[in-house]
Length: 375
Image (cartoon, rainbow, N blue to C red; front, side, top):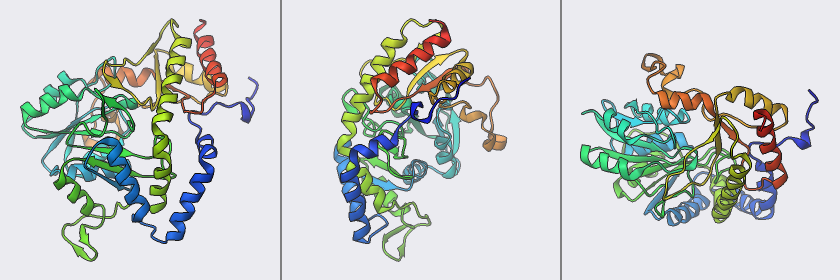
């Protein structure tokens, strides 16, 4: 097969294109953060925290080093710890499980809805035990989970409800932003996210004053003021430069998400009717931010190889469900435990999607999928 020239490769996400569009403003903001001399937390981070809390419609937003640390800090601040269980999904990035385990609690999995691939509320109900302290819902691929149904379960069973909104910046449910749908929410600003930093970054959104205060302490060695350590914690502070980067990007988030939706609608039209190919279901009232455009196919691996051979950098999110990860050791589950999640993990494929995706790139990617299917 003839090699595809570098300039003809279609990336899964094009961060360089985004930087070029923002270059003058971005360079200025980064330079100002460097010249300010306060390189950890500092005014750039504080300004972003205030702006993002307003955007989400919550009282508090607190930045930290990563989305993984955000999960652990959020749960610890709410009192989750050893002896507790947290119910979550096995179909997501493993960081969700890592954040739970870092608190000393146990991750308990519930299967996903076969259509949306978000948590199945009936499965969550079955997974709740007397040890359950919380439910951690993941807004997979940017579509909010059914927080109304999960909230009803949480209220009736006396457990807390949290959001892993790592993929969902700008998404909404019934007009309310993801991040404002539970007791608290964790975010990731990993570079490839819809709202991404230029390095690792994360944060916690909440209306709960006590959680916010505890997160503020836990991210900074347990301090309320310098050199007064009230609790044993650690260091999860965010660098000032990342706050500056996020502050420049935030005003563009809604426009970028709107572009992603247009691309998704174009993909759906171009790929409609292909035998064996299906889309992730979208629930009424949900406004996904379309972090990823995911299709399903029984011959996923062959389709992926075909696309990459055409210079189309498709990818798989996520090929191994969390309950089957070797890192769990004796906690590791067994195949067949969560059939909907395991079937999805074998079939899902992410196609290139980013705001700057051109019509020609999208058309070529869709044509390659059709060619594979003989459609």
